[in-house]
Image (cartoon, rainbow, N blue to C red; front, side, top):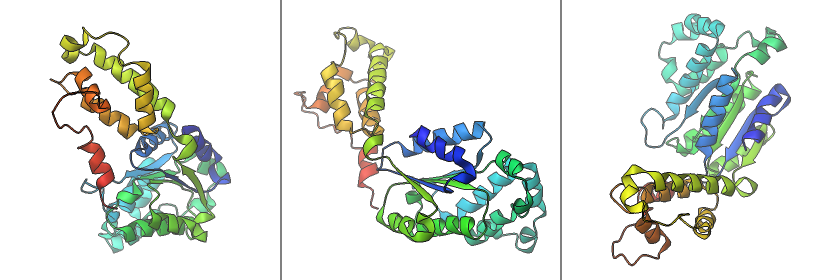
Length: 295
């Protein structure tokens, strides 16, 4: 997946300016977006990023998106910082940074001279904008509006930017991406099917179970447990149940690794082989909240 996205980034102006990475909740989309941000940031390719979060104030509303992008882009290049300081639109309306629509115009004003720049200078400037968790923006209308503004940035303003958009494939976003003005400029990448990370989940589980075996907090219990623990069959069973999604694997590890509980007993409860009468659901917290949240 990272190689696929990296190839799109390297294509620069030769490829489509938008990539939509979509997949189900818990598939690892934000982890991929974070890794791409760090990698491209180290190569001076990252212009800006915004990670929506449904439950975090200032990260769940549309009005914060484009001001954040504009400021990050301005800070990424001295000449753009100077332009932001002098831009007339700020002098005429000092509150424009808090206006979503105005902020798109503010963003465009940072590139007033890009048509006159050389290909070499454009190639050396940060150009990648990452918007993660688009479906976690509060209102569906706002989510669709954001995509309309991305289309406007590409088609109307012709800004030298490339957008990595990350979200679940919810129907209203699918409909917008299927519209011709976005479909023609978008590369579609899905975390379903071939990119299910079963091998990576297997590596993660083996590493975590090894850590649990050696953890001081579980030493009193684990020193009497035969190795390898758990068995290869159990590892494979958990990998199959995860269906390649890290959220399942990380949730069961948190449950098994909880202090003051026996990892062996917890694993038996998870597998349904325990005779314990305790009604403990390992998925009652993080996983249930993730999948039971209304769309």
